[in-house]
Structure formats: C-alpha cells, structure tokens
Image (cartoon, rainbow, N blue to C red; front, side, top):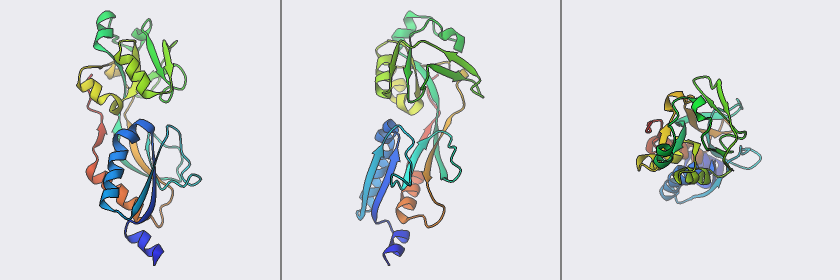
Length: 220
C-alpha cells in the first residue's frame, strides 16, 4: 500500500539537484511551491555546479543545463538559455566595443571557470571559432565574475538568466550577440523510465505548467 501511494500521490522524501545560481534563482521557488501544495512531501534541494550522480547520491530528479552524454537518463526539456558576453556601459564607453570575436584582443577578459574551464571562448553555430585569452581575472564564482564586470573591470561570459536583471536595468550590456553559439537546453533529468514516483511526476508537472525558463530574449 505504501509503494502504491508513492506512485499515485506525492508523499515522503523528494531530493532535487540543480546548478548553484539557477537553483537559487529559479528551482528553489518552484520547489517551495511544490512543498506548499503537498505538505506530506519532505524536500531536499542540493545546489552544486558539478555533475551529480543521481543514483549514487540519492537524487530523484536533477535540473541540468546543457547537452547530456548519458543516454540512460530520462530527459525532459523545460527551457533554454543563451551564453552571452557582457560588460558594463562604462567599460564599453572607455574602449572600442567589439564587433567580432577577434576584436576581444586587448580587452580585459574575465574567466568564469564553471562556464570556461580553460581560458578560451567559442563562437558561432558550430562553436568552431575559438578565442584563447589571458584573463585579467579568474574566478569559480559566477556572482563574482558578473560583479567584476558590473564594476567596469572587463568582459565576461555568463548564461542569460544569470545577467537578465543586470541587462534589463542597464548595469550590463550584451556584446557579440550575433556570434553566440546555439542556446543550451534546460532539462529535468531522472534515472528510470519505469515506476516514476508521484513526487517526481508532480515536480515535473509543476515546472512544466508554472515555470517560464526561456532565457533567449535578452538585449544585444
């Protein structure tokens, strides 16, 4: 009876993992909404910028950004986001605004290692155009990279949802939008096609019906 209940109505423990910034900004509010709707569900949200092993770490469903290599996982696309280059208006006023990737030479470039583990950015439909650079600032923190750019200290790469508010409010400007690689999918991922729990099904349905995770319309 307990097993049947887990498959038919949300109850018990639900573990969700997500990238750090996206999880804080977008997954956490959705998860809180689920817990408010289903008080018998006990939730755990794991935020980390690494590839969590769903089975080994007891994760029921993961929110992942980007293309996945593991064909054994069940994947449901729920949105997409762009990779954008941004700088402050003040920085761009003092230097010539880049019009092509090769114009980045001579600019102060900020490397955010979760997006660019090596100091190289790729551009174009097939990401074939590569620009290697010597970074003026390196950090593993998305917030620190974006904050450094907002202070007028250079150009950084970020995902569109990470800088949406800053672009809307005029604190950052998108550059080289016409050279961006294709958008990245935002996906829900879980480990099995059989006996999907009511908890996972409820979370998936809530995200699909209430979340607008489309971050492709941005200035630039």
